[in-house]
Image (tube, rainbow, N blue to C red; front, top):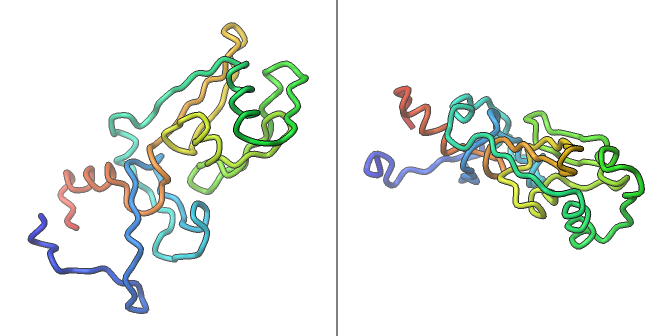
Amino acid sequence: AVNSVFGKVITDNENNLILAAYHAMSSGKTEKCCDVFGGDLKYLTDVESPGDRVSKGYQTIKEFRAEDLKSALKDNIKSEFDFANLPNDWIGNTVRTDSGMVKEIEIGHIKVKGVEIRKIFGLRSSNFNIDYNSERNSFIFTVLGYGHGVGMSQCGAQYMAKQGKKY
């Protein structure tokens, strides 16, 4: 495999070397560069990556007690969160990219970037849903994919190779 591509490069339409971004596994569709890193590299756009949906570890779940969620947010984001309401009211509107990553989510009446939530809670990607479980007084994060989602998905590429696709 290495010998077949040794010495080759990939260029954009203006003959410039590309930014060869990759990640472990998308959530089924890759991300546009502008939605994650800023900038507008036309070749780093959102495309379907169906093989990721059947990859091991595609969906992961993390659970945090309500008090732990509150503490982690207050310790990591210097804002005045409003946690006066019951925990099932702490999560508000979510803004997503076309591929499903959380761009911004309202928690305790404060808008927080999805990448910040990913970092604070150690999530595998920014494509997540948060549900409150009142019986356990905890928040459950259901996370899809692994990584930032821009460029080539390694699991998606492996899936395509197994389907007979070439580089």
